[in-house]
Length: 366
Image (cartoon, rainbow, N blue to C red):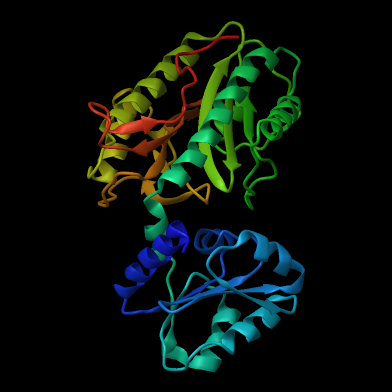
């Protein structure tokens, strides 16, 4: 038996037992991949006795190659056809936990097994995935290493007259060349954030044709995958001569990030990490210009629990993978963000974390 997938299934089943449930019905590609090794169109039905992967005919042979420790069942194409095949396997006396909140889909299931037999709750899935295994950390680390290489390339490619889009094109090519891939976001049109000058005042700016100019701060937020797993990092570069205000804010963000990283450790309350970062920025007069959380979990999703935000009473735990990414954004002027991907690791004496991004964080003026 494949020890990794067996362990994952047992952990998830243990977590759903806390809500008095013994069966999993998973629709999300990230969870299907986590449980079977197959990333694609499908539905997983899981309990202590078996793991069944329902997938359309066009995916069947790829699923047969990629999946581990599951029975693969062919279905017709389309969510309704796959769902009907899956529903036929459900028992009307069993309780099922699902990660899909689609109203029509859930009603289909309820019509078959009853209103009180399906629990829509993705918390057990995220709880299970939040503690990373060694193989998962390996892939996140590889993704972070590629990001560091890309920042080295930025030093050579950022010049006056080069556009945000031109730099993105180069970095996309280099990502694939180095074995990386990309997540997909519904909320943006681009795989990277490359924001210069006033564009950098938008935390989630879309890449544009704006050309880099003397005096710009250039925020470059790079997120990429290796074997499904995500690393996420941001660096902010200066071009030629920067204003005193730009330099001042850069140092505030850098120090805030350093303090937050120092605060991270096994069994620390997550809200304390955000508080450390936010209070430092507040003392320096820019609390209203820090308009997002201090960080988030990473893994098979770009953004997943735990959320590094105010008043979060949850604890950081060993082998959680998170980002720390404070930023300050001055409307219509510029922005600064610095971000690393880290692993909580109490075995590292005096640190408590493993920082996966090694690229320089002192201000680099190109």
